[in-house]
Length: 454
Ligand code: GAP
Image (cartoon, rainbow, N blue to C red; front, side, top):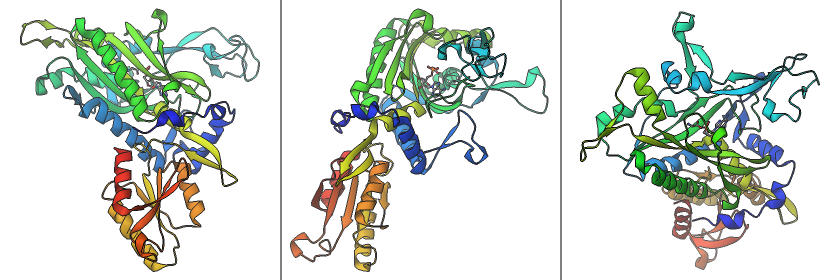
């Protein structure tokens, strides 16, 4: 395991009031995250992942799939649609209850969440009077087909869970899993947040990684504990420092309508301690509600006891975007290297978009370039994320890779070609966090990279 605990000693940075600005600027400059529809002035609550962000996101999702689905014998996947029959959201309680409090300024007409304001009576923009608090449903509505009446209204799903519950019977009938078992899904969800904010923290279009884990009603506590541990293991695997992830037992009045117990996993973001992920005990609320509303039996038959019952559900729900923001915020570093301030991302090698960069010391020496190309081709057999850079001097190349979190840089020089015979076929391996360099054979470098990214 990568030594993250040593890397989390960035308290001074976390106290830096400009840290979010620095992260947002790096994310844009280096192609991780761009504002959505930027050339038209953007669209609040939407962000696009750029070339490096896409790979970072894929690496996070792949790791989640591996840990939450593929490495287990009791997990199945689905990929359900975003548009679903609106009865799904009536039965789940989202049509009547998925709302946030809202106040509108009588003067400038801007809308706010009163629980986010210092003074819930005064407009923070124009100091006008704020009206009465009312509930605002956060589901996006659209219409299917050519008719435009109430009968054609559908919603963009507010959580991926809906498509898991509606496929419970299909998975049981097609694969006959034994209880306990779970269904995992990654996908987009949409919420018309009143006040999207904090970069990719509160979005209107987001991605979720969700599991609905079905258990006997008496077994829920044990399953809850197992998934709780799994969530901590995942936090460690993506490189979140242990000391920055905190559990919050959500009190009765604050839980979602479907939950009898919820633990929020909170993270120390630069703007404060906020919800990162959630773990909920959803009882048999959803399966029973969908069974009733669809007149479909959603039960499980225990072959041994011949008992038929509605399973209960444990739900680990992880937002992809909040995970990425936590990763970027905790990995961001500044240090003094050779008398200049260096910025780097101390990303866990497993999730870093680029695993290593290969570079010829000089780009105008064909024999160096040819050898470097050969080394890169060899290393790409381990992983495709082996980059090439021959632009500018070697120090600049290292800085560029540091800033995007590349754990290793490999330089091919005249010694590699055998200028000093004892060093023939060796290269320089530079480590991102310390800047230390060592001389290794190419198979040794391959071994270092493989073991770091496993
Ligand atoms: N299925 C359960 C569910 O959706 P939730 O607490 O509303 O529960 C789960 O959302 C996770 O989705 C959150 O812990 C967070 O990671 C992410 N999430 C929720 N709303 C979000 C938003 N507006 N922007 C980004 N991520 C969000």
